[in-house]
Image 1 (cartoon, helix red, strand yellow):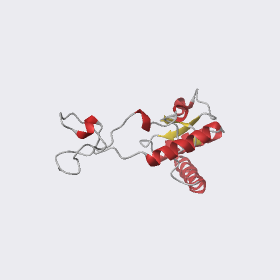
Image 2: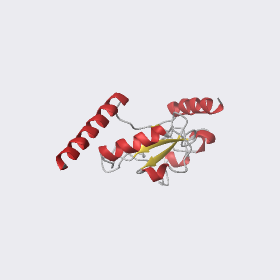
Image 3: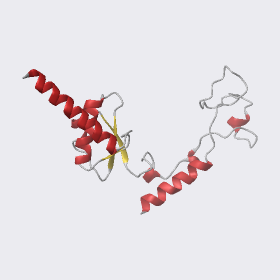
Image 4: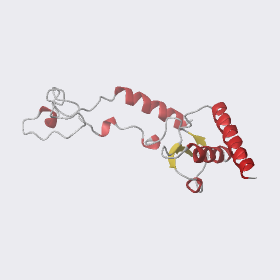
Length: 149
């Protein structure tokens, strides 16, 4: 219950947080957008003047207990193979399957993870589509076995 409240609070804080932009990145093409600390001797931003651009500081951070957690409340863990799942807790961790995996290994990994009760964050397809792919994979394997005989 406490965690849900803190996640809602983090969401509220995130809405108020300004998009921190590098000073004068909107003015010059050569100055790119990602944040860099203002270092000019007369910089209004460095002085933290009201007229300057907002700069990142501790006051914009979210609650410490939910920092880095997925909005669902789980801790995200990137998974490449079945061995990565060992030692993880399905109540605490949610899985993100690596994008480098092919369909065959991905299906096997997702199936194993769901049988262990893990939440998979990037399924990308519905369960119905997943079942269809599994059926197609099984039929293709059976066809290969028949051809070999």
